[in-house]
Image 1 (cartoon, each protein chain N blue to C red):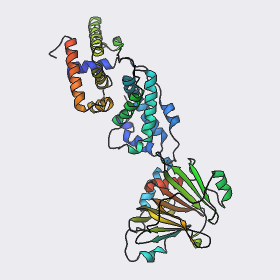
Image 2 (image 1 turned 120 degrees about the horizontal axis):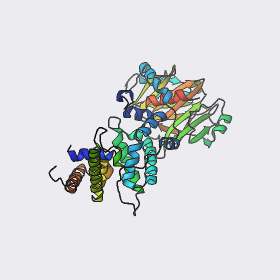
Image 3 (image 1 turned 90 degrees about the horizontal axis):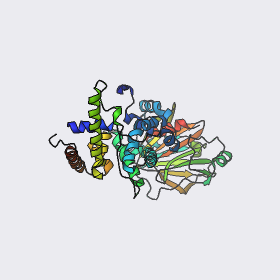
Image 4 (image 1 turned 180 degrees about the vertical axis):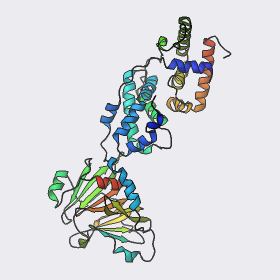
Length: 237
Length: 186
């Protein structure tokens, strides 16, 4: 650096700029409320330590035999060689309601994260009711679904078909085992009271965490990482 | 100056902020609000517009944190967003960029004699006048590079020109300043 450049930098300390306003308060007040994930940071390590009790990726023969073991809450996971081509990405089933209506129409207390959802769906064809909280992504479209129901595996409510491109691991969610399904989209089937598969409800799902808390099956699905999903599940109140 | 090792580094703060930790983002805002505001001011030449641009830029940066690569420095990434916001607010009939300085405050070392201080102050005044006489594009890169002490790459991103153009503009500006200061051989 030459003397002239040094002189310019020294002069820079004396240049009169308008006083810098305090921007922090104004900026903070404009930030969108997010799903709180702060408290979950230590969870990441707990989950990482307890992960991978079970991994099923492209296991050829014995998958069908294992499949029956994979029931959790209202969800039954089926390992398949290929997901049905007819399944599409579609919104959750039910009608759009307010969170208060959802609380009133279900047989259980719907758990809520700190951030209010962008939309709430209630499907009352499911025994006890099934509620989905939907969150939109920044650029529009769905970012996250949190689905809750109290039906049990005996009622075989939610069937999930997981193909070879998808992995399923057991994770620790606040001391409770949960299923983490990650990779290529898998198929979710809704099986109604009569045991019939509801074709209209077959849909492709992304990464999903399933855990049962106080008899409520919680399903968190979206473009989230495993640790974020575990943290969201832990934050539900 | 605080011991840098006791301060959380930008990348950690950004990663925590991305996870929803607003206090971490507050720390980043407080750390960079001065350089962000001054950068915006050099572009908009209005304190009001610069404040709006800087505030909007911090909000947009927060919303885009998932696209920030924590292995890369935070300040240039932020200042590029600031510069874009500031350019959007630059008025067609904007004021000219004109630097003023209160030179007497720091113009001389404390042990300097009054005569030496006076000489330095005069020299600083001349240098400032010479900077203000530079063509506008050169005045901006001199302000960004030397007054705000930004890197060449940051200056390029903010001015929206290639690094090579920053180099050539600075070199031309320094040449003019040397001539103006009567010291062409420096």
